[in-house]
Each structure stands twice: as structure tokens, then as C-alpha cells.
Length: 95
Image 1 (cartoon, rainbow, N blue to C red):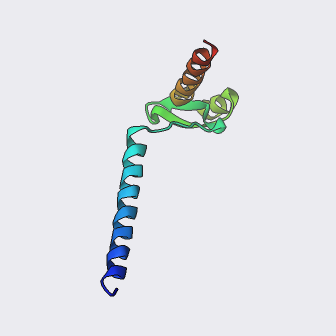
Image 2: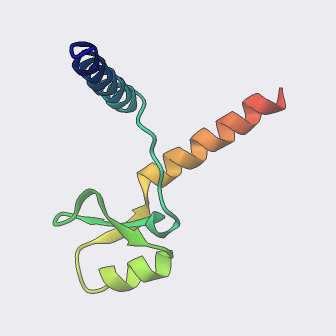
């Protein structure tokens, strides 16, 4: 009996570690890209890189921030890709 309790505790700990490792590995293999509604437009340019500063809800907000600089605004590529994926899924469901 004295050996059974530590053995069971050890097995439970190993099972928990294995489950956590498997969940982390699966999350890395299938990343989910979720773009928040406030990330639709990105301020892009030499100092911002790509995709840039993607914290703008409207194109006008982005343009106001870019005003007077060499930066420009464009749609967030992650947001555009997410829209494309959603449209493809809807088309597949329609068939």
C-alpha cells in the first residue's frame, strides 16, 4: 500500500505532462489566425515593415496617422486571408 500511492501519483503526473505536451504540439501544427476587428488596416512603410502597425479600425484613422510621413495604409494581410478562408469554407458548405 505504501508503494501504491506514490506510484499512482507518479503515473498521474506523467499522464498530465504527456497530455500537455501533446496539446502544445497540436497547437503549433495547426495555428489559428484570429484577427480582431480593430486590426483591419495597417500602417506600412520603411519604419513599420510588413505587415506594419495593424491597430486601425478604419482606413481614415490609418490615413490620419500616416499623414505627413512616408508611410501608407493598406488592408491587414492577415485579415484579408481570414476573409478569403471564410469565403472558401462557405462555398464548400454550399455544395
